[in-house]
Image 1 (cartoon, one colour):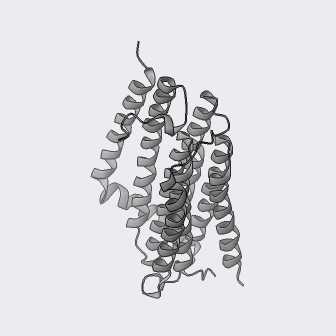
Image 2 (image 1 turned 90 degrees about the vertical axis):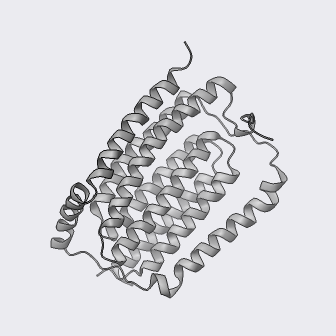
Length: 169
Length: 102
């Protein structure tokens, strides 16, 4: 059992545990904190896969910015315990079996050797340093137009959020 | 050193996505439903990174970057919509948001 296996199973377990806690928690704030746990665990897994730039972005943007926004809105709206309503029969009797079936099916197809036969190679130190550089070169050369398009998307999102949150005069 | 097969990451991604779907269907709070969407996006990102590593190509990482950017924009607009709905309906329960329900 090498170190990478131990790390993988530890943080995979933490991620799955956090995802389950998101579902079973009754208070939205507990769900949000569990989701942050999932995101941090995933960032460690990205590091294990040799994608340290994505790991940093995951921590800064996802666990930092987006989840702070969620927690802020939860506190602003004073969201308490989730109301328990009688679920529609469809959700009750078809939702859980279908969800579990989808989960099993996805896991089965992804685990087939035809797709998942590759083995993750650990990035050596030199390779890891060049990975972020190669990523930035690709981002600003091959994907320059989509990159600029996302900046316009962000601008529109800011304006949209302002207009929506302003409410009626 | 690292010899964790790619399929392990993909199975984890599938499990997280399935849990996200279950959360999306079962949660009744509109903010928590929104969090389920973020959980699914995270699961997909993990699959992207795993495939990028398996094929030794960086395009997958660029895609993850764009997914994170779009998720940030989506969170900003979506939470503004949540605020508007909460002011309008005085409730965060999605059962109360049923104007379009047949």
